[in-house]
Image 1 (cartoon, rainbow, N blue to C red):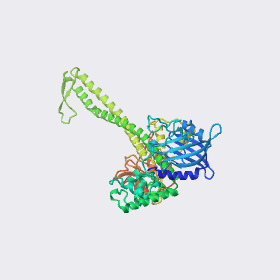
Image 2 (image 1 turned 120 degrees about the vertical axis):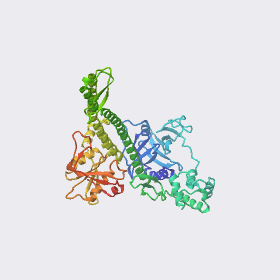
Image 3 (image 1 turned 30 degrees about the vertical axis):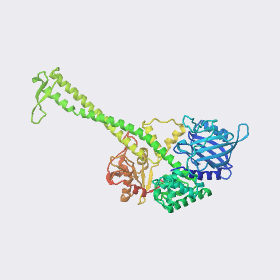
Image 4 (image 1 turned 45 degrees about the vertical axis):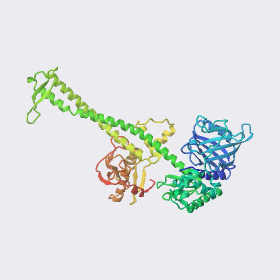
Length: 592
């Protein structure tokens, strides 16, 4: 992905066609790096323009996404409102083939006097910025990112400082190239460089994808090196440069978005990327392509960030539990000598009449089938009777420890199993809503501190109905899959009927799966498909063979006080299946 000069040219043309003459109705700044202008136009009505100076996602395009604004607007937002609200856009122009867009806006000052302001949008990676400039004296009114010469020796972005555009790159504008200059440019480079790398280094406005596409359109391999170029190859490359130049002059772009097989965005470009044939294509206007790409990518990042935060909580608690379990197991191991202490105390008691005080006692072991003698080590400072009492004390202590630790160990192991099930659900969650449900569950179980919320949101959260995944089997039966523990409980204990089939991986954290509306014999293919879903939506997703238990829902019950998703069952049978993503994708998702 590269927001190159060619993409900016396509954006500039679309913005110019739709925004010139429009009035700036509203200005918002939802976060520290983004500004939204709501612009009213006669032909298109209200248009929401997003301008981002985020280092990773700097961009400008129309958007349909919704944003939450802070209660108090940032200073830069207030400055833009003061100077630009109510103003009309006179022009939108790209600066050369750079990733800089200049808005010229007619507005009025506090006294109602007409004036003019420039709004520069610089899409430059970590150097991206949004600047309001006074054209009368070319000074900066303000910038969304302020910095002094202590940060940049080239320029300062501070109020009342002169505006300097970003430093020009030593590249050729493709619109000013002729064939002689092109050949001279190519021949001046190292012959070991690839043609696409030379284009990227020497030609303004083209990113890596565009460079590789030009080479491919010339009929050459994408990684073709300059040393293999003869007159024919250079001529073919020059023809592609001319076609690119013609497209720029005519504004004839082919905005393209590439998607993977899960419809997640991979790349975008202002021209068709014919060298990337293995991916789905979405052709639209440049603004729509950018909005779709960034909306999905940013949501995916937010999903991964949310997932990472929840996983950190779970793994911290899991680590704590594993340490406790280890300590409990060590205590149990030490307590295994309880019966040994009892026997030693009884042997001493039974032989008190013949034992003298000392370091050891030799007595007959009446617990031994052969009645052999055994030597008992004693504390010489205590009488034989006192030594026997000490053994009984150790026996009682070890016995009590074994009983108490056994209960705690069982509880800790059950909690660990629960957290492992939660971790699996977090790892496999596909949407923010799924993670939000898990977050609510962790708050209810006191693993997370509940966030402050108003009464309306609390009621909405409590009445929200879980939505398990729903599939249609190849035999036409409904298969439901819980995506987290709360959905598992809802699916198994409330939604499923007594004679529905319930499936779950055997002794492995995973989803509850229900086959609905069973009448008569269980259909084998549907049962296999449901078992495959249970294996896929479990911790054993990457395993070869996974045991999956199945039984009627009426044989599944929840113990009193059990955590969400935890159930017990009987009358089960076991299938062994291989988790298959292909089979899962073949099933038809359906609305319940």
